[in-house]
Image 1 (cartoon, one colour):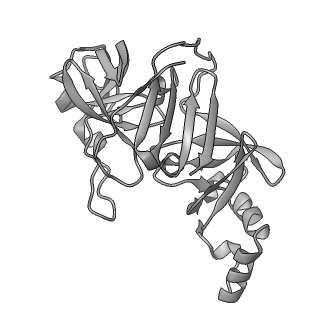
Image 2: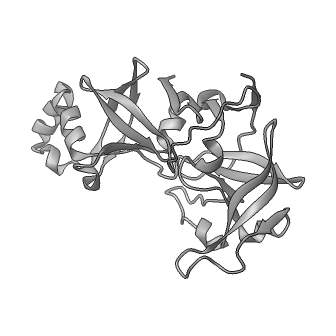
Length: 258
């Protein structure tokens, strides 16, 4: 399997990953998003080879139209007739982060494209690559984001990866288990006179992937994940803080700390 380098854009907003792509000889800044569909800004679409499939927006709430993008260049990977959504520019407005940065991109590269190929990156070295040979048949089991199995406290649990989230979220149950297994954290909470019920963030979340221990920094405790099948949703922080590879067609994901 051969890989090609993909330019990493200088755009900065939260923990999101931005790549330099191209279409119709025009350079595009794309957010790498492991959830949902690929989207193109309406103001950018007029300069691209795009065939609209809808004459009007799908409904009053969804500000996009379905379309086919004639070509898309991702590093050395050349795609044609890519299904995309042409969205109003307001759909890309995510406000500002604590440093005043905004989501200054032309498009979102979504899971409908990402899941077709293999990807790997070393964020510490600024290296991002995409598969350009030995393509495998895509898994027919459709999901709108990657779902993986991770090891936690001696058992296997399901986790999702959603890089449209800046931070990882975990359920209160897993957070309590993580705290109970960490004497230092328990003693700190006791010293502060707090219980896990008072805590909204976990300072460190440790799990195993492919028999390797992986530690992630600050995670948010999310009550809505209680009693759900998936109790961990990794955000863009996961791909920012590990060496990783995503083999989309097989659903295999490899992670390791720097």
